[in-house]
Image (cartoon, rainbow, N blue to C red; front, side, top):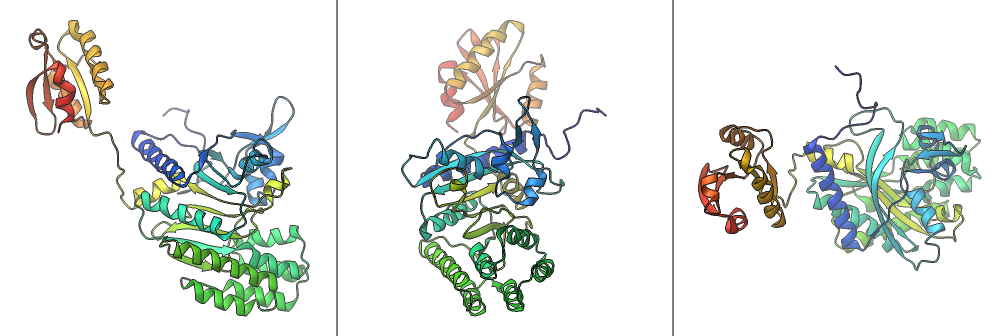
Length: 430
């Protein structure tokens, strides 16, 4: 066994896996086009300070950070949003709003590798920048729903909440932001008891702790019932009630707009990233435990990086996880590649002709490989059958004297002699 293996948490993608990943990426890109999102490409390496700001303690701890040869502290990107926010704060600062931006690529976190979690992973990222209106949040939800639907995923649902609910309670208790972030990190890990204990240690009132406990229990699939219950619990916290109303308005717009999203409302839901200011959500499928992505509203990040105050909402979809969910649900990908042809020359003197013929077929948008192993015709056809080729073109001297070749249908195991000038048409007509 070779000592050279992929670094732990990194992977090689073999042909079928790569094909699925590229299909997910292609579908994500097509969804971006349909919604008017323009693609941008940002660096894999950014300044550590940029990536660490508001990323959350968990991500800061797991970033691939290092000092470059110029003595600068840099890191491999752990997510896309800080890079996009930097772009908006600098190069795009005078661009008219709203901005709809899309990016895709690899990211890096030193997580413990497990099913659905890797140290190198891929995301498709959408950011809608410049609007405070709830229809912007509704658009991100609808876009996320459409991507899952286009991929053919079944039994999808979105877990949804609002950071303003928790922040509204904690701000009224005069708990400073740094301490709030500690509590949010615990809630992101579903450590509710620890969060309540931390609140007690911070001197939060009994009323606050009771309200938080009741909010943790306000969850369910009947979102309007959950909203009603939450408003009853939060009646003394005006900002938190306003957050519930904002979330309800977003959901109303999403549903009335035609996106038939199944929802699970959790009023105590938090995500690890510290920059969220409003609605947050995570998409799931019922037979895959891990979130397929996540997103929400962040209205202060662009300003943090030196830009004008700029509201924004976005979502990142994990392409690895979408691929795994498709595999789990046995979803076969659609492909436009209907024909695969192998060209088999009989004898040394026809190798150049095989290359020439393959070029002609490729110009007709047909996928072609030339037999280059020196196998006999029978061996070449046997291998082509195993590899799923649809057709074989056999070049023999006798047929070529009449500008013809033998075209074999690999599935039907039938063959016929065809004039070269009609070859592409014959291959494509079935």
